[in-house]
Image (cartoon, rainbow, N blue to C red; front, side, top):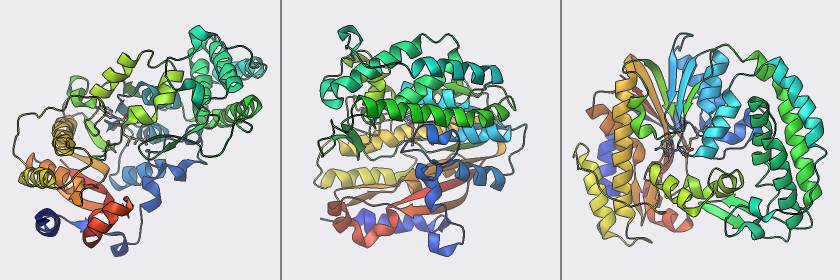
Length: 438
Ligand SMILES: C[S@@+](CC[C@H](N)C(=O)[O-])C[C@H]1O[C@@H](n2cnc3c(N)ncnc32)[C@H](O)[C@@H]1O
C-alpha cells in the first residue's frame, strides 16, 4: 500500500502554517477543549454535553481578541450553548445555530434571561413536582422508540412520564423550560443505557435494582436543587443583553439570518469527520422529550446536519470547486485502502463540502478585522489520516482569511487498530484550535 498521503502530503501541508504543539508553549488548552472542566460551573453543570467545550476557553479567546460590549459573537454549531453563555456573561450580543432540537432547547433554556419572579415561581412549582410518584404507564404517552422498554425500568419510565406531564402543564414558559431541562438531564443516569463512543450501550451490570424509581426521584431532586442554587447567579447575569438569538436551523444557511460584516468573532466546534451522529447519541433525549415522534422525524433530522456520518442520509457530491487539491488526493487514497464501509471516502468529501460552505458564510458575516476560532479534531480511516485542521485552514486562506496560528490543544486516542497503522504520524491525530482573521 502506498501511504503517500501521511508521509508526504501531510508534512508538506503542515509546513505552510504556524502550527504550535503543547510542548512549545506554556499555556495549555488541553483541559479546556473538554466539557468535564465545567462540571462545577453554574449553569454548565445542569447538563453534561460531552462534545462541548469549556466556557473558560471562551473567556480566553474573548480576552485574546479584545472583544467589547458592543460586539456580536456567532457560534454556527452552538450545541449546548457554551459560547453563547460566556458571551452573555460578558454582556456581548450573540447568535447561535443548532440543528438538533434537543441541543437547541438546552442552549436556549440555559441562556435566556430570567427574573426574580421566575425564581419564586420555580420554588412554588418545585413543591408540587416533588410530590409526583410513579404509577401506571399510559401507553399513548410512551415514545415509539423500539427499545424503550429495555432502556428504562418500568417504574422509572412511569415516574418520568408522570413528571413530564406535570412539567408540561406549568404555565410560566421559562420555569417550565428549567424543569424540562432538569428532567432531560437525568434520563441517561436513571436508565439502563450509557452514551459510549458513537452510540448507546446497555450498561453491563444488572442495574434495575439501583436504577429504580426512587433513584430517579432522588437524582431529579438533586438536579432541581442545583438549578435553584444557580438561579441568583442566572438572574444577576440576565439582562446584560437581550435574549441571545438561537436558531434551530442549519448553519449552512446562516447568511439568511446574519447580516454581512456584522460579527466581531466566530467561535465554534463543528461535528468532526469521524462518523459521530449526534441524533444517535441523543436519541433517548429526542424521543423521550417529544422532539421526534415518528421514525420519519428522526430520518429527516439526520439529513439536515453536517454530513459527518453514514446514518441515513443520501451522500451526494457537490460540484468540486477544486480549491483544496490535498482533499482530492486524500479521497483518492481513501478509495484505495480497506475500510469498514465503502461510503467513507464520499462521506469525507461531503463533510468538507459542508464545512467549506460554512466557512464561506462565516467570512461574509465577519467584519473586516474580525476573528474566527475553529476547534476541531482530525480522524483516520484505514490508517489514512484526515487532517481536518489543515484542510479547513487551507480553504479558509484561499477565500481570504489570514491564518494566525494552529494551536494543537491535545492528542487524541484512536482505536488500537488505527493506532498501529498511524503510529509514525501520530502527531497529526489531534484536536486543534484554528485561529483565523478576516
Ligand atoms: C461539537 S458540537 C458543539 C458543542 C458546543 N460547542 C458546546 O459546547 O456545547 C457540534 C454541534 O453541531 C450540531 N450540528 C450538526 N450539523 C449542524 C448544522 N448543519 N447546523 C447547525 N448545527 C449543526 C450538532 O448537533 C452538535 O450539537
